[in-house]
Length: 232
Image (cartoon, rainbow, N blue to C red; front, top):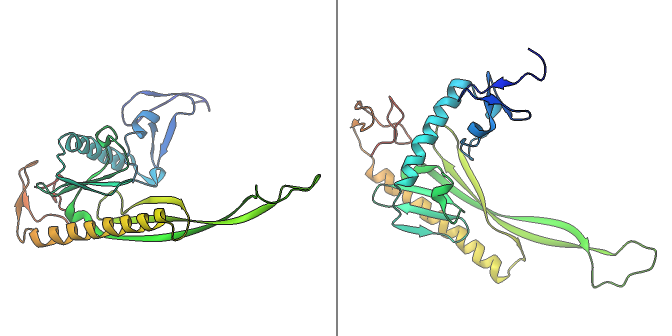
């Protein structure tokens, strides 16, 4: 085969256009199939073909769960926790219509922790208030801005963390800064409460899977040990 011969997607079987190949460890993937990958998954090039097929099967099942998702409450303003207390499910998304984005649906039991940090960033900008001298570069000044960043720790076969910023470009101790810290604390508390709620309600013995019919002990992330389907 020549260097510029078209390759075939090992997922869907379609021809891959110029610059459209998304390499896998032992295969090729077209950009349309790559768009279906979870945004939380990293290291695509290290994934074997069969593992990627399993991941995309999970994503297809996840899309069905998203469409049937019925939230009972939300937490947060920029990034929102969409919570279904009845089924023990949660979606974390900044999309105004998250159902169109196919975000990963998590069980309460998959949330293993949450942290947030206030990051400081220093940068140099043009000082518009300073006098300027002809023939010399515009005077500059250093500004310090802050962002409030949240990390959610997740027990999943496909990813372990989700990171997002509650707010960026904040002035220290401003009202926006205080609001962002308060929102991060609210998110952390809500996720901690969901984790302990799931732990208290976790089955202590074998559970029948509604997907494959097998009976077994749920995995740590609350899935069937045989088909990896969501239990509950």
